[in-house]
Length: 377
Image 1 (cartoon, helix red, strand yellow):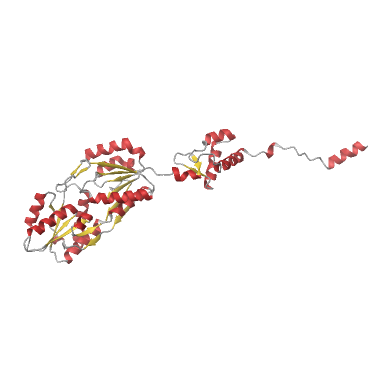
Image 2 (cartoon, rainbow, N blue to C red):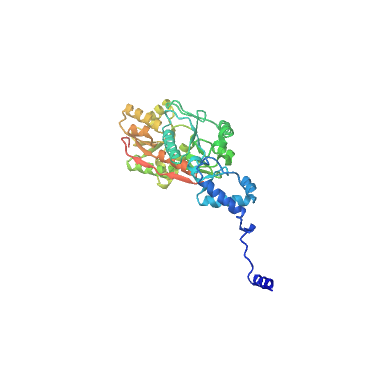
């Protein structure tokens, strides 16, 4: 009878078992999370050492690679880990050490004494790379532009030579570059043929060809041409001669096209003479001899060294009717000579070019001209 009473009591109040069950063990995903959180604060784990791959973690904790990757991503959002561009995960402290963009490849002319414009551009590029913690892959080639003697015109590489130069660089260093900064003399045909191999890329100093995913930092030649003509006409010059420093420079062509457009807008096309070449000492001397003796004439020159040479010849000629002279580009070369000039901030242009390499979409930044009154107008 006592046994029956015990059985009845047990039926009403079953015994509770305190033995651990399988269901109380952490799930594989939880065990992985605990492992990773421990690793995140483990100073014995070198900062620059990557975590095991998602495949290794999945195999170790008996879960799918997708689950392992998702766990790493969630912990990265908590700033415990950081994913490198290689795909590997590191402790978050590794980011300042390893998260450095690939170098900016500067595919520009070799800098020489007459490369004042590009010297200033390169100073800005260097400053921009420093601010972005980006190295520079500097490629100076004397075939692209050879201008060792400021008294003579530069020699520009033709399209075939440019194509060989560009292909050679891309084959050797293209994979190491994190973007390309391109001299303005690269021809549109060569750039279009290279296509997406130059992305992200920034064309310096002039507009980028249509149809290419290239950004550009450029001088606002439309505003500069309008400002130049308004200044010279306002000073009483009745004849303006555009002086071509040398053939083959796309930026010079772009500026002269802007002068024609501005002259039509200002209704002064009749005062604009045909352009005259003055790239050599002989051409410069011939230009000075040809100037009218009674008409107030101004020379509009988009190259500082040629402008300084013409200014020297004008002073030596001791003309009775003064000739005005306005330099466009306005580097330190024309500033030191005291010329009236229109300048652009080439250093800011270089810094902006580096910044554009980090942007996902291509765009254009135009830099405004600044007029400086010198002794020549």
